Image (cartoon, rainbow, N blue to C red; front, side):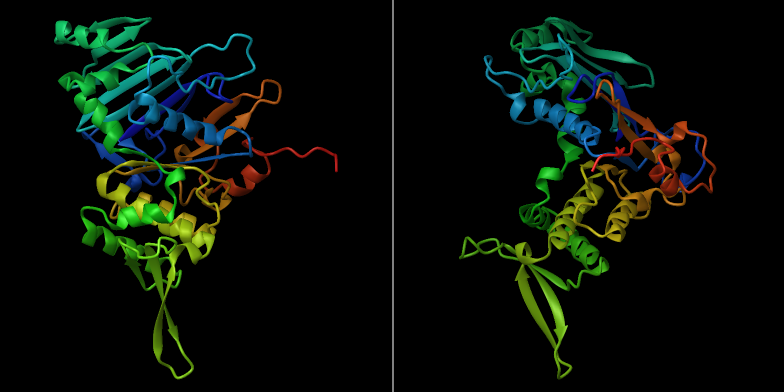
Length: 393
């Protein structure tokens, strides 16, 4: 489970910003909190608001970048290839980008961080708290490594790690037990999904190894959403390659009062239906495995009540039984309601007019009454993070 994510010097983000999913002292909606090890209480969801071009998406893109360097295309770069370095540009000499994450996995707390420029990894460290006390697993600073276990063996692995590759990656390629568990959290739990919201994602989810159970849950969710869907068909070997592998079924009552069924390819449904179908399919998978879901512009092409329904699933401990979490960006102010979200679940991104750099802050930092109309206050500019319109045409 995610405790916090931090990023420094990345795109519009100049100074370090930290998104925390650790519950504050707010005593509202305590039922929704995720508890592990009896002490740590975490938020099931965090909603990020802000004007267009304020930097909301850059926070999620930073998560994508971290994951790509650990498990994706940027984890296996040839020595001569550049790293995905995209720093805050309004500096004569941009410094390193730094990404860091604190998380819980199998009842153990981990802290992992690395900094880099376009050519090399400049620093990297991994700590854990196996018995509630901080302990270093490894650190790396300007090419020099430090280990606390199996020093000679890990030193050999470090010598085989090129400058543009993370030691977390190379140590797992060589099955080093010291980093194995910490690394699995990235492969098993993190789910950035914006590029996966497609009919193909729906098909993959419906063909999950636990197909029957997952399929039933997805189908039930589609029916509950009142999209007029009564069933879903999958053709894993379509004869016509232009034909969708997924069809949604609608029941229609004709003039004689008889019920007829019509199947249409998913890609011919409305954009909102396609998006919700793909989202709910991924949603069920994340809920099943207790993952962390990152969704940019969750409300795109969807009715606000559908968006709220998706967030409600994460907020409901009877549905979210495995500690799944959601981080979303949105412009849907319908969610800005303290009867629905806690103050520490509502975040804002604002951009400095002089430096054009993004800052991130939570509603928890404001003095607001429990009955305050947060939606109205936000639209009136009370918390910042809204567009400003000049006097021009």
